[in-house]
Image (cartoon, rainbow, N blue to C red; front, side, top):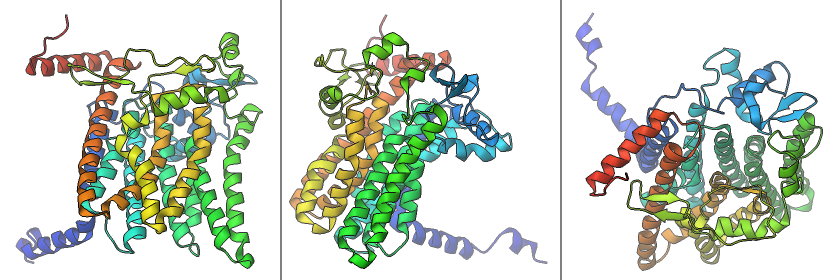
Length: 493
């Protein structure tokens, strides 16, 4: 036996494997690079710089307890799972969080593996999924404008995927592996995949893409209801568009899909009834944090039309950030009160940065550029209209809610990605002079969004939010002093 040959394969074999890898990844190398960079950066922020994933997070183990309860055939959870956030019904404790992340934990809980230490890992998976889904949506948009088989340009890939991965509120969610943040990130991922499948169904109604869209939309609504509402409304709009196109003999198919979307949304209320004995998804009168005075302030309701002016100002207008000489230089919050809205009935008005400042590239692409795309390219009019119509119910809900917070801006990111993809592709097909100017502006906007997102997440994690170990806070302050000293800034006394 020639052991030398077995131990040292022929050089040509390695070359052929490398060539095969290059052929497979060749068209996707920019996507692969941005995905890898985004994963490394998110893993760094979600683990507080340690890259340790098997760590228990404060209020990061609710889904583990929920999975354990589901294995026992129950929906209620023990005290240690929910604590002060509990909804109390008949002496039993419930959470308002959807069950899908708990269902994904069932194998680990059943095997008693890493109980309570899965939040960071799942958030990384959800985050990577959002970047992958964004790429699939971009490729679909390119195919509609330039024809099947067309590849997105390297610039388009970098701008959209860096914007989705590093320059959006999705990255901010990595500041803490809370159950709140995991729910929003997971819902965003499922919503993006639902929208991609819905777009494929719109382009090829004879296929079965509607199954993936409906399944992902259902998963989204039972992970994060606003994200699911957007995804299922998006799919419902696609169904209604197809109903207009279909001959009367086949009209029942898209109409049944529209009905299925409605039923899928209502399953959230059905599950709420099983837990709370009311169809309200978050009955505040059953919630521990809400005493009589707090309920009276908001009249016991989660939504008020009188909040529209204040929430619109918060999400669309207020430049609630500041630039300072000290690292990390960009900060959430101005320290200056915004406009006062006396009619608003708000329970929580946390620091929130409006979309045009937090994600300027996405905001312009999803609005002005998408509208321009509809004028220039008739093939994208329906997808863009579906995206805008799909986000309307979710927008109404969040713009009338009694709470605003930076993490809630992430609920809008799936819409921005969907609409921005078509605006970006239209820009890429513009005349050279306009394309060059647009690329320069978009490149600068994306860089700003990435720097701002990373800075806000870092400072929020290490300096502002509860539950961070003291040594992590101290390491951050030491880092700030070193960087400030390097740039000639005198550390504060």
